[in-house]
Amino acid sequence: MDTKAFKRNLQHSENYNRKGFGHQAEVATQLQSEYQSNLIQEMRDRNYVLKRGDVTIRLAQAFGFCWGVERAVAMAYETRHHFPTERIWITNEIIHNPSVNQRMQEMEVDFIPVDANKKDFSVVATGDVVILPAFGASVQEMQILHDKGCKIVDTTCPWVSKVWNTVEKHKKVDYTSIIHGKYKHEETVATSSFAGKYLIVLNLPEAEYVANYILNGGNREEFLAKFAKACSAGFDPDQDLQRVGIANQTTMLKGETEQIGKLFERTMMQKYGPTELNQHFQSFNTICDATQERQDAMLDLVQQNLDLMVVIGGFNSSNTTQLQQIAFERGIPSYHIDVVERIKSGNSIEHRQLKGELVITENWLPAGEIVVGITSGASTPDKVVEDVIEKIFALKATVATV
Ligand code: SF4
Image 1 (tube, rainbow, N blue to C red):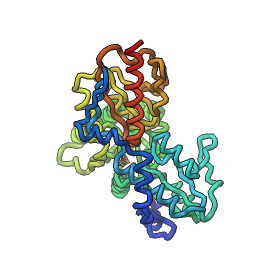
Image 2: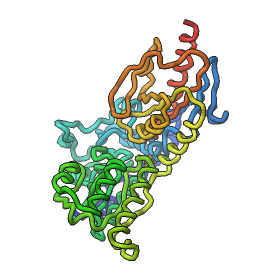
Image 3: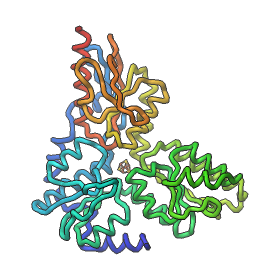
Image 4: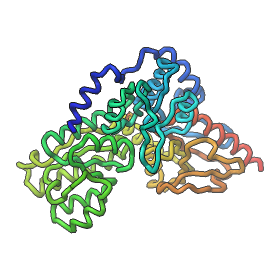
C-alpha cells in the first residue's frame, strides 16, 4: 500500500479530525478538577521538595503528563462533548494510565474488543466515532475504520508522526528502518506499519548483534529466528542491511537510541568507508523532548541522597519503565506502582519489577527520617502523584508510632 498517499487522503476526508472541535474551554475545567493537584503545584513552587514529619519528598523537576498526552486526553473529552449521543470507540488505551482509561469507560468511550490477540473491528458501525490514541494506530487499522465510514478523531502525538515521516523517508530511498523499540508496543507496531523494510532492536546488545552481522556475516537462521517477530515480511539480513536508517519508539532511553545510531554509523563507515557513508546510513533526531526531559530530571534526582524511589506510571508504559531502570542502575531501592492502592496499610507495597513481575515487599518504608524520590511517567496525572505522596505521609506517621 502507498501509506503516504493513504494518509494524505485520509487527512483530507471530512470524516477525519486531528485538531479538536473547539470545546477547549468547556473541557479545561473538567480536566483541571479530575487530574490536577494543588499539592503538586505547591511543590513545584517550592523547589519540588516537601517535608512532613520524618519524610522528605523530593520530586523530579520534570515528571508526569507530557503535552502530547494532555492534548490526547483533552481531545477525547472534547470528542465526547461534540458527539454526546454517538457511539465512541478507542482503538487502544488512550494513554497508559489506568485511572485515565477508567474515566474513558465511565464516559462511555469503549475499547475495541480484543479476541485471541486480534482486535475485533466488527463491533464498529458506519457513523461511529473512533479515537486513535496518543501513540497512534497502524495504517491497516486506519484503513479499516476509513472503509467503514467511521468518524476518526486522531490524537496521535506529533512527535510520533515525526517518526512515521522518518520511516517514510527511509522507504522512499529503499533504506531499511532500524527501529529502536519494543516490537509489541502499539507505537512501534504503528511505526513499522508505515515503514518499508524494517528491523526492530530492543537494546544495545541486539543492535551490536546486528552490527556484527553487517560487518562479519553470521548465522542467517539464527538471525532470522532472533528477530522473527521484529522484522518486515521476507526480511533478508544479507540483502536488507546494506542501507539503513535509524528510527525509534519515542519513549525509549534517549542515551541508548543515540548509542544505537552511532553504532550503525560507525559500522557503515567501517564497512563502506567515510566517502560512501551517506549512501548507506541515515539518521534524523526523533527523540521526543518530553521523554528526554523526564529522563534528564530523573538522572538529576538520583544524584540526591535518596533512601528510596517511587516511580508512578502504567505497568505497560514504556517511558515509566525507562525511569525505573535509571533508579535500578543506581542501586536505589525503587518501587514502580501504577495506582495508589498498590501501597497497603501495614507498610507493604505491591510493585512491578523491571522484567514485569509483580511482587510484594514488606517494610518498604524504613524507620526514622527518610528521603523519598518521586517521579511519574508521561501518562500519569498529578492527582495520582498527590495521592501517593499523601499515602506515604500517612503511612509513615503510623509506622513511626508503632
Ligand atoms: S511522551 Fe513524547 S511522543 Fe509520547 S505522547 Fe508525550 S510528547 Fe508525545
